[in-house]
Image (spheres, rainbow, N blue to C red):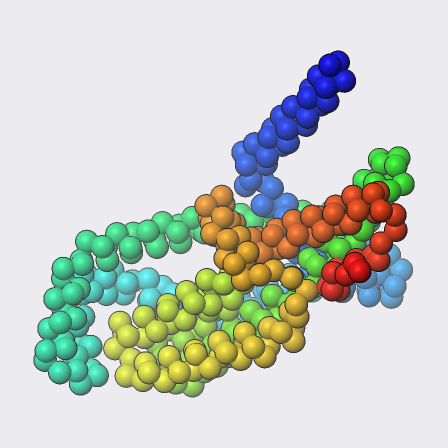
Length: 362
């Protein structure tokens, strides 16, 4: 009876500590997100720092050189491209209230009908639909505005994240060594070491692959929209490239934004835009992404969608960004834990490495 009571007490204490830990993470989620992005940024810079470290014979020197070059690139970008993007963004922002008014009143239907040669009945149907749903359109625009405002409030991350990343670049190895040294049990130390190695490989691969895919999208969108003389081509191309980072829903939102702005601005060749966006999406999903990202994330599409929706509920836009790596990390921990428990029960098993197929037992 006493043994049962002690086991129950340990189980209750474990559950309580786990609940307290989850509660603390939820309350401190803003700070936690800043540190997670700092880790991601450190993974992005790590290969360059590692190479320069050998040449300059010092990690601190390598970090200083990389950050100096990064700052120079940011300055050059804002000097060369920044003013144009700012001007286009300001003009687009000034025209949006007028376009919203025309959309709610149905006036935009008459304008689009004249520009694209729609028949009178078709124009009347669209105009009637817009007028009858004017309240919903206004509420949707307000929600989008609030989302954009939420993103703007997180602008401090652009300054804090690179600064925090310096510490991870300098002392990342010592952090993992400290965690491993705190565990006395050899099997548990091996379990944690394997988890850390898998997480390291997954995050490094994910961040670099996402940056590559987003850069490809930004270049292709900006180039094609500029050649096709789409209004605000540079701003729309930048929006499409940034949204490429958002798993699952980002590319769709970017494409809808581009087509919607083109239509509202009276652009004639909107159908060409739709075809281009569809072809580019197929190329990204079935050619570029499999080659660059590979199957290393090992997530089922339903799991990815669930992660995106849960991330949006917990931390908004930033939660969407972090959803896929967090889900992949949980999968790694679960798989390593299962192998650890089976190894304790049945003896040595074929080890699992991140990105490899799951071992099959006969």
